[in-house]
Length: 405
Image (cartoon, rainbow, N blue to C red):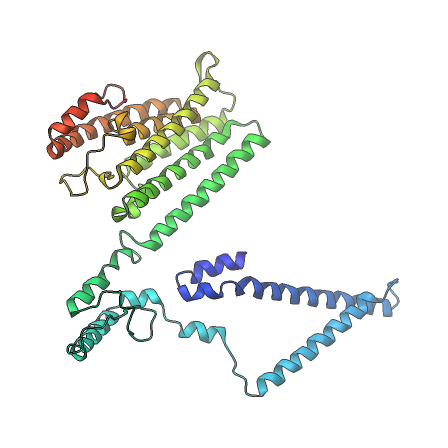
């Protein structure tokens, strides 16, 4: 399995490599078998030699016999392999195969590919102008361009072919919608979520330490950032990008806030595990309240993003698009800004679960000021977009965030 993972990371971007991925565990199984045979042969020969010298008494000759049989088999197999290759059979070198493989990403991004496509599209347009344009497949994995199925649009001109090819540019490495960047971040979030869940469970079931609160915050953060991208990609696909994870949103204030929460939780729970931070023994109640706030807050925010669809954006829009609609049904009939409501109580809930006294009040103050200004600015634009419809909607539905009407 380790070999399969290594192969996926090193060659996963090659579509052709996936067909041969099954061979990786088979090859390693054969190697492991040969290692076992060699180990058995060596042990058998050593035992036989020790027995022959009179230093060891064996009740059976099986180990020694097994060793000689394996050595004989390996010797005969090597002779057969040598004779087979000497008869003119082709010798396949994996190194040679890899050296002759061309990096698909380099071909896509290289200027030589664009110039080659430009030249070939020009030639084909000249030769087919009397016959009608034939659809051309510009797949970078092809050795040369062949006719594609007739239901594909044809490239009728040089500029059009280049323009359609450049549509792929945002998905290359280093670009805002880089598929490699998205996959890497999703992978890291998944690993972090799994490791934090395992650590949290191990501390809870194997110890009585309150230090499980530290990996809990990692767990909640990993789930939050993954769901931010997933909900965007699910219902607002065209704007989904690396930034949709919100990992660097409001930088560096966002990172400073979470770092402070980590530090307070780690110091208090690791060095003062017996501290009673909740008054009048209300610790368990506040813990359950915090868990409920985190769960409900995450649910409300994710559902709001899914219901709004293309009308939702992580950035306040200053221009109305054709896809913008005033959503007033579903969860938007309960909360005027459900995504803000969800994050506000999600953030406070994490601090209750972690037992952070200082960061709880700091989070409450910072989040309230942030959403108060953002809602005021955003609603000014929404009134401009939807006019009286939004004014009436604002009168009917509240934000459910304290002191934000």
